[in-house]
Length: 252
Image 1 (tube, rainbow, N blue to C red):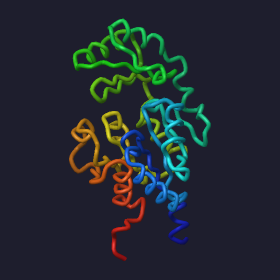
Image 2: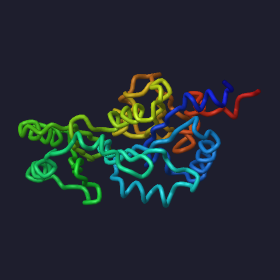
Image 3: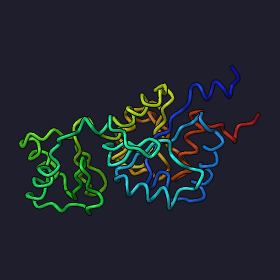
Image 4: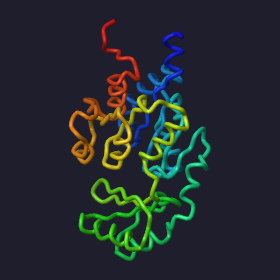
């Protein structure tokens, strides 16, 4: 088997956050797109965003180069997975009957303000909950109501509630199985606290140079690659570090 055939038989899978990870530097994103295009089937790309599918689709159309189209998209904080433009019903069916309306009511009754309707989906409730005590009270109220959920708090006040068993990490591992990729060849990339679970699901982790302290401080030292470069350039740098892309700086 030639090296090229071997690479295609054992592909890498990059699962990356979008906002401030891939986006933020259009020239760097273009360079990464060219590198991924050259890699072909040896390196698959999936994007993994907290935003719903429609919002992500708009970003892909407006900000991504024409030659950069993900093999899969994970959206709404790991509650939605799409491959080839079609939703994977086998993933979402497990969350059927989740009490979205009741979760929304509980957080509203506590006086919290919901995020815009575009960020609310069937399996994700998003509110602004600003302080640790308020977040603790919200967690307690949801628990007392018997809501089976995961809670992701990030940034200054982002408070997202999703079904138990969903999430960026679970969806990432589902894709590993769907594509038949060796988990040892999974690479994740991100910049914020809501990427933490995804990082803990992978051996190869890239924190871009502009990553927030909330992510860096939550990870064990030397358990991830902290890129020097920001945004897509940092993802590109990390992929070369792990050997998923050839290191152009190495002398032959």
